[in-house]
Image (cartoon, rainbow, N blue to C red; front, side):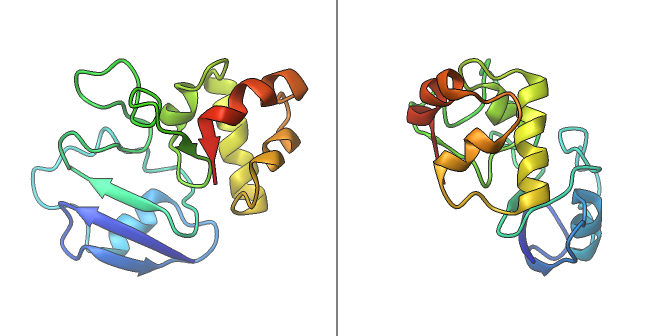
Length: 143
């Protein structure tokens, strides 16, 4: 799988990673973060997905499991733009209506286990997403 590592890393660009790789693994493959970069906004233990972009130390950029500075939620919902189910972070998923940390993690777990979403309808396969929840989420997500 291929992951795009960008921002304040020694060798930004595309990294070829094995399935099951984590943020820490691909960050190391990109030469690691530059000195002084705060990595606390990254969940280094989170599994990565094919086609994902990881932004390291970029102020104001959406980070995995982080919110945008000065904003109570993450990008995607505050601007009215739908959230991409294949690239959304835990925080972005939590910002969706009716999605808390448990359901957001289930969505990420489904994505890790099954690969990329090929249709928004596959969201119904996630435990905890019934017909009513799906209908409320459908306008806020895309693939």
